Structure formats: C-alpha cells, structure tokens
Length: 343
Image 1 (tube, rainbow, N blue to C red):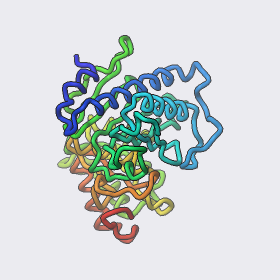
Image 2 (image 1 turned 90 degrees about the horizontal axis):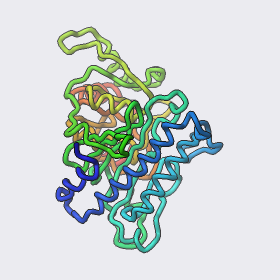
Image 3 (image 1 turned 135 degrees about the horizontal axis):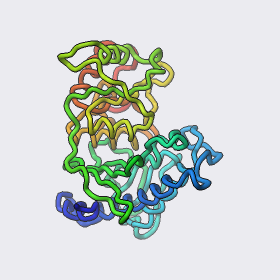
Image 4 (image 1 turned 180 degrees about the vertical axis):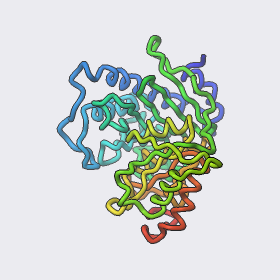
C-alpha cells in the first residue's frame, strides 16, 4: 500500500511548475496533522479540553485544541520553508513568514486548523481544512493579495478528519485521493484512491433549527427532500453533525448535499469562503460533485477580505442543481442580485 509521500512524489510531474516544493508542503501538512491527531486522541486524559479563555477574530470562544492546532500547523509550515504566508480562521490578519527562505517560497496557505471544535468534548469527528495557492507577488515578503484569489486558482486543497480513523483527503486538480493514518507505523497510507461522489444521494445535511430564517428556496428544497417519491428515492434522510469536514466526508462517500445557507439573521451564512468553502468546493468538483452559493459557482467568487462568509451548497451534482433551481426561482428577493464577484 502506497504511503502519502510515495504517492505525492509519483504525482509530482503533474504539477506545471514541478520542483518538489508543493510535494514538500503537502508533506509538512501531513506532519502537523499527525501531531494534532495525537493530541486529540489523548484529549480526555490531559489538560487540553475546554476553552482557552480567548476569542478568535470571528468572535468565537477558542478551545484549547483550536489554539494547539493553529500553533502546530503554523510551526510546521514555517519550518518547512515552502510557505510564504498563512491565513487562518484563528488569526485576524495574514501571517507572513518574512525570512530569506520564505521570501523565495512559491505558495501560500489558507486553513481552518480545527473545524468543528465545538464537538471536541462529546467525541464527535472534527477536522482540519486547508487550501494552497501559488503566490502572485514577486519574490520578497508575501502580501494579502496572494491569498485573496478566487478558488479557481487553487493548486491544492484538502482536509484531515479525526474520527474513528484519521484520514487525509486531498486534490491537486487531478482527482481526489484519501489516505488513512496507520498509527502503528505513523504513516498515511492510500486507502481511498480516486474518490467519486455519487451523482445522486439520499442524505441532506442542514441545521433545520434555523428553518424559520431560511430563504424560501431552501425551505422548498427541504420539503422536496421530505416528499414521498420512490422514483427519485425520496424521502431523503437528514444527517447533520455540525462539523463541515465530517458532514462533507460522509456525503463524499455515500452521496448527499450539505447546506449552510444565508439566513435573515446572517445573509452571508456562517462558513468562510477562503478557508472552508473554497477548499471543500475544489474537492467536490474534483470528485464529480458541485459547489454553489445558490446562484453561482463557489470557485468563481473573488474574495474581498480574509474572513468573508458565504452561503454554501455542496455535494452530489444533481442535488446541488435542484437546490440551485429552487433558490433561483424563489429567493432572488431574499438577497441582493449576485454579481460576478462578492455580494
């Protein structure tokens, strides 16, 4: 069975600027993931659970594991020398590595170091989401513009899911492959080659507690999912974990749709475009699925700022298309008309 490093090295020639830098960067992410996985697995035995006593830039209370994961991913990427800058959910601004090696680095990384951390204490799957861009600035310190690129310019994206087993799933634009951590040897091994999401699914994932605040198109889609129609295998099953990585990973394997829409209280939704929606959208498309904000392709949206939020519909292509159809027919008055950039 191939290891993650063997697989990355074999695929290195697929990269248009093949020099080994992207391969080493992915390797650094794998190292940090193993460190975070070790800490998560013993969280109940140490002083690592609970709140850190601070808030992140989103105004959310930071868990101790949020801080731990953020620090270790930044440290691994800094030490590796292939990353010029990082945008993290936990930091207000861009973290620029301003040293001689980093000024020559070709890539920048946007990441959610610990997605779903509110589920830590109840032993539910959580994850890390990452995306990698080739920087557009010249040599020298990276700039914020290097990260404010649309998702269609991503060179790689992926996530790590820490659950009953720990998996790293990633794409470099040539399909999606999954690797399971063998803790006995400390290696990620290829376990899910060429992952494909079914065109049709029978699972919809949404927090229906917010139903009264949803746009009419989302309400109609939920009713559509609940209708009895054996021809289309409806009613569908609802499954919602509350961790984007966990919900998407299940739907990637079994087929389904994940929805976090805009609401009357939060028209732009909750999820962040740069380091949640974009990388998951790239994975979905590379696996044969779709990702939309209800009106347009996620990967075509140009970010205006680091922590920009975005409504999110992602999963099996036919399910996303049906949700888009109902959104566009019934919710144009809920939002301002979408432009080619941001709302």
